[in-house]
Length: 321
Image 1: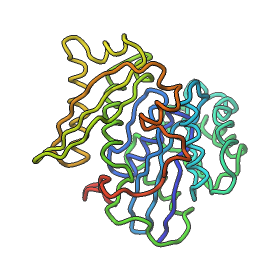
Image 2: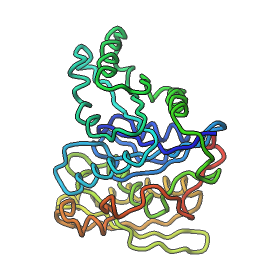
Image 3: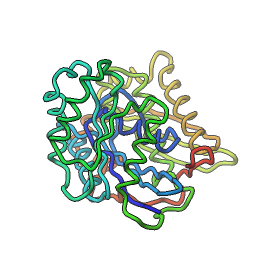
Image 4: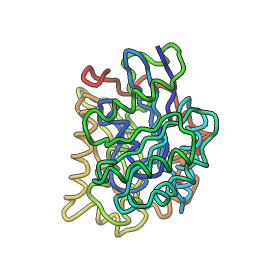
């Protein structure tokens, strides 16, 4: 039996959260084409006959323009320092397929930031976008020259079975050891986290432009009622115009956000849920440390990045491996 922690590290929008969901067999992490969708570390535990893998999804490393962005980067690097294995994820851009040097240059700074100790596995996603497969070899060779990776796995994560190839490569790098979590453990996050994330997920799907980046969600109240979990939450935006967009004509937009988030939460938690949403203008919340902490975006040193909570969602039978 093998057991270890595995950090999913890389630029934004390269497929880290997509891979986590595929590995878990659960749509746990929020996935969106909007850059910097992932803002916090998220544990997801994969159970296999030969190994238990404690994945930690991380925010995409980027050049921050706010205190929120700086905290996101710090969180990713904090997770990397404590991991047994680093899965460095990147993707291919068809526009750069002819230029291996330019392709690799996008990830050079990320790789140089990472700690030296843990074993590193490079996963190159979206290889299906490069139709001429002869162009792949120079790119993969350039990545091998950039760093001595323990293994390099080219994949297309949208295709069935590709996540299993990555899992096999990861297991080979894990240390031998007993399982660190109970057999039904899925994550370390409890209900409030998923309320915030799944409400924000609906905003990402609905709104365009600057609005998705201006949104945060806080929990006002969670109450156990007979046969239902009642939740009140506030969506924070930075400008009045953004608030009007999220409310929509006659409240249509906020209703759609609430309905979508409620369905996602009921599926994850396997119970009925009543969700009431409000929208509030909180100017410049991304730049104020106190407001960030109140919204759940604490500095990395202030929070436990890997520790199971008793009321966290569990693996359903269909999601176990």
